[in-house]
Image (tube, rainbow, N blue to C red; front, side, top):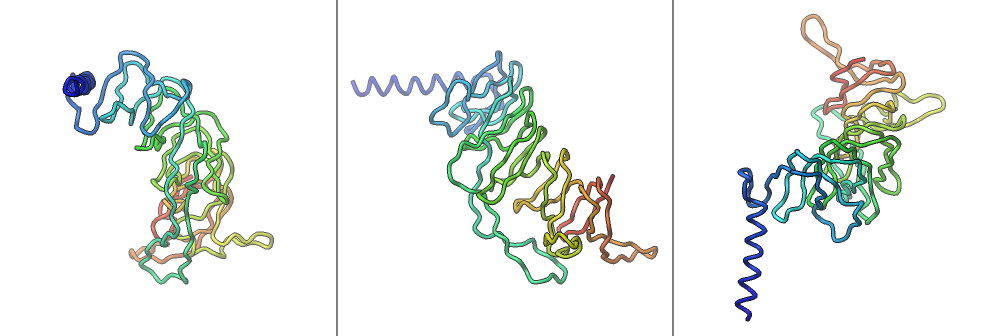
Length: 271
């Protein structure tokens, strides 16, 4: 009897594997792709319970990537759907970016995402591709609508609007579109601690970036690329005719898109 039940169980496993893997030349031991003949609801990894409305539906005629259990890792959504997004892991201390020039005293700024369980959902847009991590959290996709709030921890949150979004593994957004004019520190902010202080503001390296524009962040939440919302003083390279250059502090107008290098210098500027 035990042998009979074992044979039935193994036959079932083999049948499921055959149904998923047959006709999929791109199948591997860990994941494979499948073209959908119909709009199909497929469960991402990591779920132990879900309602019907919480299961994402993927679009007919598109290709999904599935893991060895048939859970979806990547695919094109058929409809708008609220999905959990990258929660990340706690970083107690993040070392500052290495600098090859003489810096001021190094400041250790802890950067982390609160790991406590929450019902963290964002609305992802139908007809666009979404990618999940092995916990079933969306790590790359396109948001629908506007004014969504990403809570990082008790102190920090980011307002985001519709558009492409992706996350670092620690839960900090890597790319998003800002819903509000927002103050961030750029890469190399310790070099501009006082440049933008006024009689009524003292933000110690924070500068304001424009709502409705995309922003790129590193894993510490520092801006790599964004659009200035106010006239702002930044470090820039001044080049001479003979090919030499020096670092200077220069004022850039509001609306200027700035990309910072690893030393916090405004390396690429456009408006």
